[in-house]
Image (cartoon, rainbow, N blue to C red; front, side, top):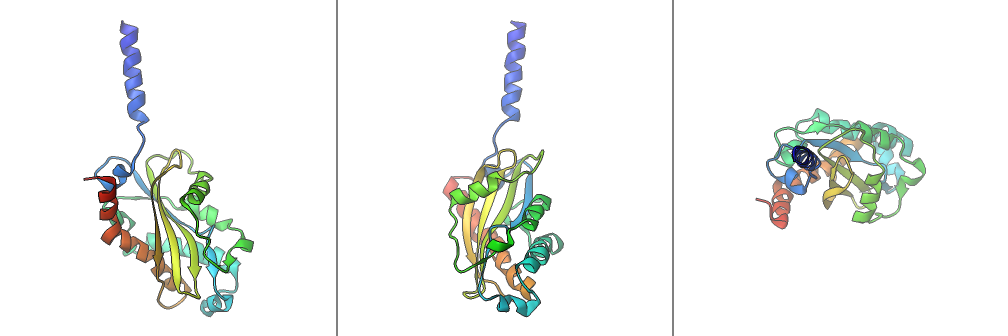
Length: 215
């Protein structure tokens, strides 16, 4: 009997410790750790004449990958207006952009230029995410996956993803089309992902909760 009780207690602890995170942990009060993982630009398509990108001093895909991909990610860490914690009504979000920074640094230069938006599906995004390696991490990770920066149409497209950090499974997913703007290449496209942050903060957060029945 004693062994049975000990075994039952062990199963209870194991079950509690392995409780899967859900979107509700992100969209309501929860003790689950939330991390900001950054913007994955490794699958982005830069659409439009590269002479247009050169106006800000860029001379090709390599400079954009090596200078602007990390620069755009660092901007979120450096400037308070890029409020990824407030975006999901959290007092604190851990910043953990190093894995995504490494992924961006290895983006294939031969595939960065494109003529049209790839129109990635949720299944495509899950396939990308399955290849991530965050090491021994726990909780929920949030990131944007950039699909296209279209200079010709002056639009940008991003996928918002919240994932289980242990399994890399998608918990919450949405797609945003935004408008860039401002002076200089960095600020011009930074406005596009700032638009995603603001759209989630102002409208999508509440819409997600309503859609999922979260109070």
